[in-house]
Length: 101
Image (cartoon, rainbow, N blue to C red; front, side):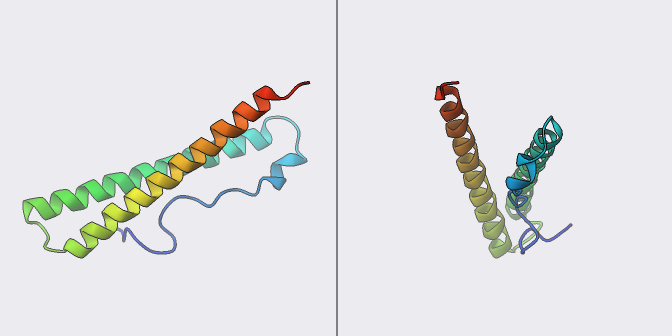
């Protein structure tokens, strides 16, 4: 089982938006979608790991309440970040829809 906390865990860093600006077509969109799917997958993995640590604590498999609390907090923070990113994407989409061509 891997460690659930540290500098390499959590969701993927947000890609540099300027990279996709010069490229026309779906290459930039495909990379963005893949990055978004990867980030959502990592948030899901964090949620599942937190669930496993809670279950292990409840069944008595472990007595490490510190690790359980860290896993729960990390899952909460990563979920909140994902929701804020979703809110920003929805707001950007709505702004684009209001633009006059």
